[in-house]
Amino acid sequence: MTAIKKESLGDLVYEQLRNMLLNKDLVPGQKISKKEIAELLGVSQTPVQESLIRLIREGVLEQRERRGVFVKVFDDKDMRDIFSVRAGLEGIAVRLCMEQCTECLLDDIITIFDEFTLPLDADQFTAYQHADRRFHEQILMRSDNMVILNFLKEFEFIIRCYQKGLLRDPNETLIEHRQIIQAIRDLDIEQAQYLLTQHHLRSRDAISPSNIIR
Image (spheres, rainbow, N blue to C red):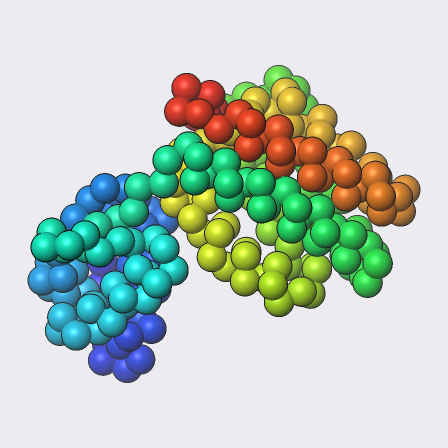
């Protein structure tokens, strides 16, 4: 990792810390050393402290009294709660997409899963993970709703940090994704919203360390 230049230090350090969380360089439960982070990034401890405060406010890190700053540990209930909210918001998001910009939505997402054939081989499995994330991100982004976009920024980041793999087998979810896409093709807003909401509620109910598909 290269040292950070001295321009916009606060924002750059903040982004580097977020990347370290995403890349699992910092893992749940780990204590954060301001000195070590500062040395690693080639900056003073001041922008590191400012970035840690931002991440604490966002709920990704936590300050433990007399012990320091730690990467927050999200348990199964926390993740189920997040997926419950995600189910509702993403259901609304697909409705907004179809009401506002049907053509651009269709152009961007209806072919995402065309290349996949069950059962998936190892290469397809990895590609499917990326396609799954892109599909849901595109629906949220195309909603053009700031509340939903803020959710994408904050909660999608948490999900990517703490979800170790797919929550359910592609044998289930690929079929569901294609059903959602068919509803979008048919311009059936009610069905698309219902199917997408149920898709996430099923994932919520599957959240358990023993159920995650790696």
